[in-house]
Length: 77
Image (cartoon, rainbow, N blue to C red; front, side, top):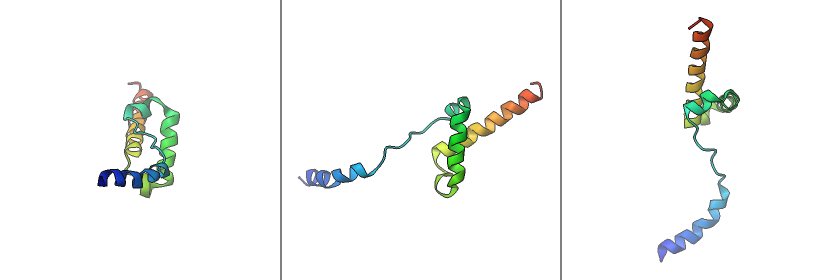
């Protein structure tokens, strides 16, 4: 009975939270430069709150890999 009461008391709070954007992989960010740039801009705008989130970490990792790929290509590799 207590669970049912708790459920009804917490139900109105469910509408207060927006659904998350979901976690993207390093491959997602590596394959989509615009998506990577947008996520990195968000991360740099609020590093205190977002720097250690999975999306910021994955976008940063993908950015590093993309830079290495560009350098390798520029060097003829």
